[in-house]
Image 1 (cartoon, helix red, strand yellow):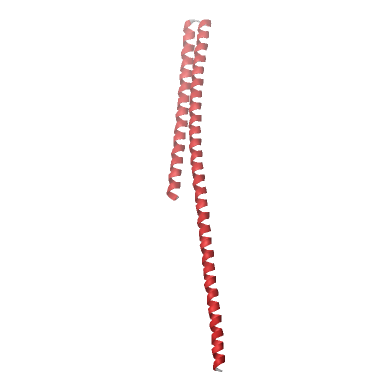
Image 2 (cartoon, rainbow, N blue to C red; image 1 turned 45 degrees about the vertical axis):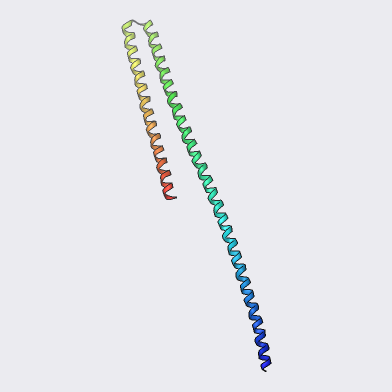
Length: 155
């Protein structure tokens, strides 16, 4: 009977050793899987971070480009309005000169003065409109800067 007990204990010891070995292997395998998943997650996070940074840089470049093109458009429009105003002013002057030849000097002078005042008023109104455009543009740029600042603060 003692022999059977010794054999049973020996068999139990072998089984226990086998279970401990399997548990150890399972722990190693689980740790390897966990380490692999952590490495994979870090790689995904790094890729997403790089993509985000690239997108942010692209957006920043696009915003700068749009701002620059917007400024150029405004500048072109201002120059165009100035040219139109100058052309209209010249046209008014020419028209006044033609009328001077058709009418007497007194009537022609009055028409010239009226036309010139009208041209000056038109130029002044155009200047006022341009100032409003400039103010609106500056407010838009200020709002954009504030938005960028708030995004940086919240990031």
